[in-house]
Image (cartoon, rainbow, N blue to C red; front, top):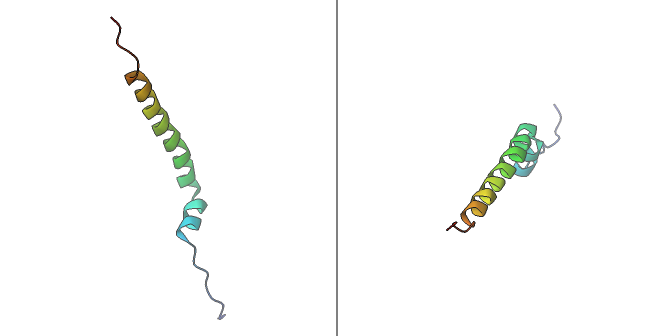
Length: 49
């Protein structure tokens, strides 16, 4: 057995090492932002007379 200390990963390092989380984040964030942006654009269109 070696007496070397075990390095603990920080939460940020664990998150950034998870490729599936990064992929989902890359898909979900733009989808949510563009959806909100689209809703804001539709709401801001003036009513036709």
